[in-house]
Image (cartoon, rainbow, N blue to C red; front, top):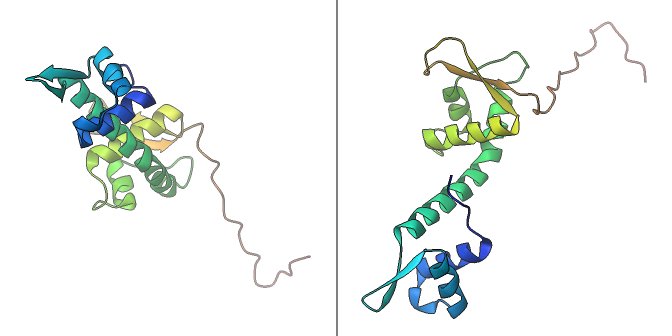
Length: 155
């Protein structure tokens, strides 16, 4: 796995993507030392490593924003401890027009790593993977059954 960038490197890469000429000397040094910036024809250019790092960082930011929405949708669909569903049900609940399939699957995998969800394979087929609540998921709230019509509730 690639080494994660420091906040200073991320800030410098963001600045470099906007306007390469406004980088400070310290930012140029930090990027050059990490192999994220190079000089071609007397101009600074981002290396392939830097471009991959920017993409990876933007995917992580998007994932961090998607996880709470997908978690809410997943826990709403998985309303009991025994309930299982495929990713499509969660995707539909979260909004198919708001998320791409891969975004939903990445968020579900992150929730699985946190223990909120877990996967179940009922067969050897990779297309039959089901999701259910994990050990770290919030407890299922069982609705209190209303008192029968003839019963008087005591205060």
